[in-house]
Amino acid sequence: SYELTQPPSVSVSPGQTARITCSGDALPKQYAYWYQQKPGQAPVLVIYKDSERPSGIPERFSGSSSGTTVTLTISGVQAEDEADYYCQSADSSGTFVVFGGGTKLTVL
Amino acid sequence: QVQLQESGPGLVKPSQTLSLTCTVSGGSISSGSYYWSWIRQPAGKGLEWIGRIYTSGSTNYNPSLKSRVTISVDTSKNQFSLKLSSVTAADTAVYYCARSPRAMGNWFDPWGQGTLVTVSS
Image (cartoon, rainbow over the protein chains, first blue to last red):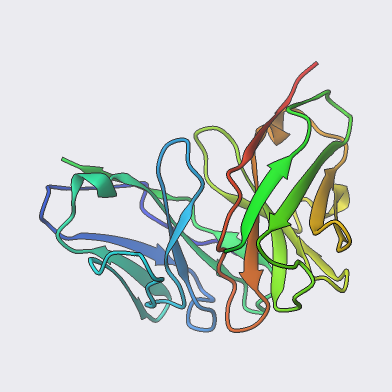
């Protein structure tokens, strides 16, 4: 079955830049999406179609894509950004949805 | 703005069928532009897509759950539902419903708040 691979954890100091990667063989063909999830809350979409930012999401959140890897970048990380982040995409046919295993972002 | 709300029993016995409903408010489930999905998350673990339905009734299911899952839609009530049969403790999770566009991508927005289902005797 198709999988998306994320690092389990990323740590950064406030004000620094956090980069979270997500790798998958079908990513050159399928868009990637990113979600932020805080404890006890439902996930919130922060990036769609690789690099688009929904309204209401701060500009410090950005996304990029290169080959089989997509990256979520959080510039000028703030304490409130500490959360779990999940990438999501689809298999090469676009029929089946898949999530990455999630990355816990710790703000030191 | 569209809002989704899950409902159903919080406790299900092993080997029985888990049944949940998602009620859509602020918009019509029949708009024709969206898929309606179920996603779950065991405590302390990641997200798992269960499957989705289009208002025509066409469905796609996660291959790992396909043999046990049925998703249906009731446009008259603006609801869609999940049935998961032969449950075990491994099916204990927070279950979310969510909307995704039918074209131009597969992102989920909005999500329901989630409902915890525990499988236990």
